[in-house]
Length: 109
Length: 117
Image (cartoon, rainbow over all chains, first blue to last red; front, side, top):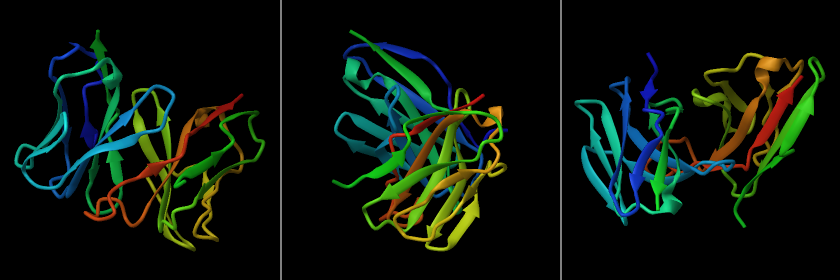
């Protein structure tokens, strides 16, 4: 079983819609959770971090964490074509950051 | 400008020919790490370093070596490359151990696309 699981996609949404990206993790001791965005041919960049249960909002992005269900999600409101990228979920459980394989998001104009 | 610099950007080599990929950061970060990225497998950690002269294995260390003689540099060495090491490699650094609330952000280099024939 993979430690961090994501649906590879592609997830296709129309411009202006809400994109919902999901991630599950296996280590119940995980402490910190991150979302990185990676444009094609580029390096990952951090867009959100979350540490406690509930929602965390930053502009058009909302990260949601449910530790009981071992589930973390990223919502992107008012999706734009420039949001088209691969989104990597990353989880820290005390030793190293473990990445999921990423979900490719396509925002259709 | 704060950055992680990797070189080369592209590298084609043959099986068994030793190579080094360099990584340097100018942010005085303690933590540095190497990842490889393969389709469908995401980013997998090869080695990491918590500070000078302190290195440890990640999830896929076989066939790789690293050293941390200076805080800013963390080269990745492939002593005898094989075709299964063809991949996209990223060096990354952060102020402290990743996951700490105050040292959370990993800064990535621009990547090295390695092909081993």
